[in-house]
Image (tube, rainbow over all chains, first blue to last red; front, side, top):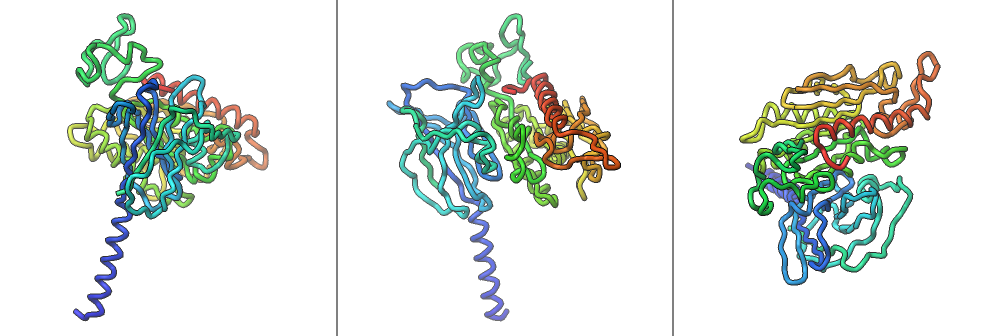
Length: 160
Length: 259
């Protein structure tokens, strides 16, 4: 085999491996809330992108406690096709359309490994947040608030 | 009745022990504080929802939002849930979405073979969930029969190129298909001759356009016959609400929560 062919094959393999690795990035998230605050079992934790949404009940997610907080951990595969991503937390309640907590995730489409971020509160509260985020439309009247109540959920994440 | 185990509403408790055992508390015959209306059981309900063609472009502009996305948002299921945008106009994404939804369900059933699986879809999203059911029928995860508890179809397309979804396999317990009335003459050119199959198949015709059946009245076509409109915008808006109500009623009847 000619050196040029070997070089081309090696370059192709490197490219393929890079592309494969990009598809395999995992987002690990952790949310916490003070133990002093009541825990509603009808709370959904959603990973929402412009393509998909994936929701789990908090009560079904791995949980750990310390003296002050209750922690929930979840992982999601990242796709390089996703243009925007968020974690959205909401409680099924009556009446419907109560504000949902939106944590925007400033992760580039082709995500790279990153260590845990600092803890932070939601970027904003919004009714119909999941629909509005997936579709990138404000098809419902904009009803956003950045007035996050104390003792709300906090989020941190890492990428591996 | 919840499908994971029988519930006696008169005695207000389950007739069998909770399958999660003592992790659910000391009372193995209890159920989320004996309040099944406001709470859900710890096991049993997973939803995959697939929207119609190009949903990411049209869903924001309508009167009702996407019925599939609204269903997803309101659905309360302890087993988790997934929403997928629809394929593009030329059908790109049908196969990949079928595989993705199938793989997600495979993982869910691998962890818990007794999980009840529910599917909803609009238009080509309906075709996709039918194809997912077929794939689960032909390739069930270990220790399962790949069963689907509820399939909600909002005017599903029954075929597209290579994909034939006209016959729903018998691993689907209950199918509710809300269809546009052929007399409306909405988008008569693409495959929608009807589906059949499943163990129980419910079908209801509505005087709506195809997009109206998915929550987007008057968003797609404005059908006519010989130049005479077959439906008004207001009719489409009003009757599409009935589509949503009918589907939610069927879902509730099957035991789904939050709708």
